Image (cartoon, rainbow, N blue to C red; front, side, top):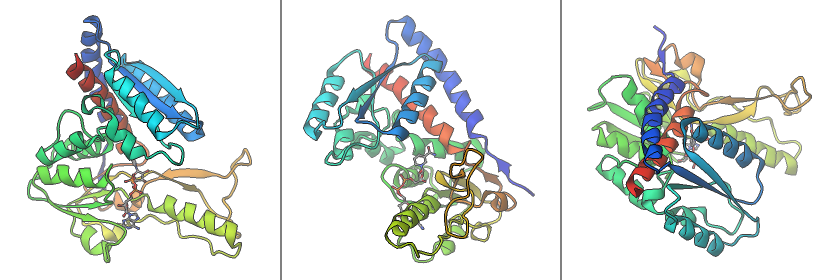
Amino acid sequence: MAADVIDGGAIAQKITDGLKEEIATLTAAGRQPHLVAVQVGENPASRIYVRNQKKQCEEVGIRYTLDELPEDTTEAGLLAHVDKLNADPDVSAIILQMPVPAGVNARRVQMQIAPNKDAEGMNPANLGMLLYGGGEIGPCTAVGAVELIKSTGVEVKGKDAVVVGHSEIVGKPIALLLLGLNATTSVCHIFTQDLAKFTRQAEILVVAAGKSQAVWLRYKRMKKKDPNTPAPDLSPLISADMIKPGAIVIDVAINRIPVALDGDGKPTLNKKGKPAMKTVGDVDFEAAKEIASFITPVPGGVGPMTVARLLHNTVAAAKSNG
Ligand code: NAD
C-alpha cells in the first residue's frame, strides 16, 4: 500500500496559525515580536531567502528588520553588531544570514547571539538543552523534522531510528531528539561503510545528507579543470531497496540539480534557454512511497517546518524577553 505523504505545508500552517494569536496578544501589550536579520555583503541566494523571511514574518505579524553590513565587515565588527542587538530591548530575536564573507567564522558569530534571542536555536545553550529533550528555542529544521515524525501518531519509543547526516545543525540535533523520545538511534554519515545495512533496519529513517547536490557541485568544479570528467551519477542517496517496508521516512535534504544532462554532461535547457533545474531530496520519493508507511515530499515536507520553527523561536524569544 502506498505511504501517507506527510503534508509539511499544512502542519506548518497550523503552527503559524497558533502563533498569530500569541503575536496579537504580545503586540496588544506593546511587545510585538521583532526579528532582526543580519546580512553581510551581497549574495543573490541570501537575498531570495531574506525576501521570503520578511514576507513570512509579516504575514503572522512579526516585525522584520534587515541589517545590511558591508562586505568588508570584520568578525570583530560583526560580533560588536550582535552585542548591540543583544542589548537592544526593541529586538526580540536575531538571525545571521549565510553565507558570511571569507575570514568571518559564522559559528563564532552565531554563538555570540544571546540564547534568548537565538532565532535559529544554534547557540550552544539551546543546543545543549537537546540533551534534556529540548527547550522552548531549538534548531529549526531538526525540531521541525521530529514534529513531522510525531504528526504520524506512531509511537517513537522503542523504534529503531536511523539518521543519515551528522551536521551540528541538522543530523546531530535530530538524533538527540529521537534519543530523547527513547528511539534506539543510529547516526550514519559520509564515513559509514555500509549505509544500506543501517537504513534497512530503520523503522524511522531521517535523511539529511544533500548527496546529489554535493556530487553535482563537485562535478562542475572538476569539469572546469578537466573537460573529460565523466558525467556524474545524480541518483538519490536512498533507493527504495534501502528502506524497510512500513518505515517512516523523513527527507530533510534539498538538492538543486539538473533535470537531465546531455551527452557532454551539460544540463539540458528550459524554455528560457537556462539550465533546467529541479529540487529533490535524498530519497527516491516515487519508489520509496510504495514501501514506506509515511513519507515527506521535497519540496513541501521539512522545508515549511523550518520556517514555522523560526517564527516559533522568534515568538518564544519575544515572550522570554518581555
Ligand atoms: P552538511 O553538509 O553540513 O552535512 C551533511 C551530512 O551528510 C554530513 O554529516 C555528511 O557526513 C553526511 N553525508 C554526506 N554525503 C553522504 C553520503 N553519501 N552518505 C552518508 N552520509 C553522507 O549539510 P546539512 O546542513 O546538515 O544539510 C543536509 C541537507 O539538509 C542538505 O541537503 C540541506 O540542503 C538540507 N537542509 C534542509 C533544510 C530544510 O529546511 N529542509 C534545512 C537545513 C538543511
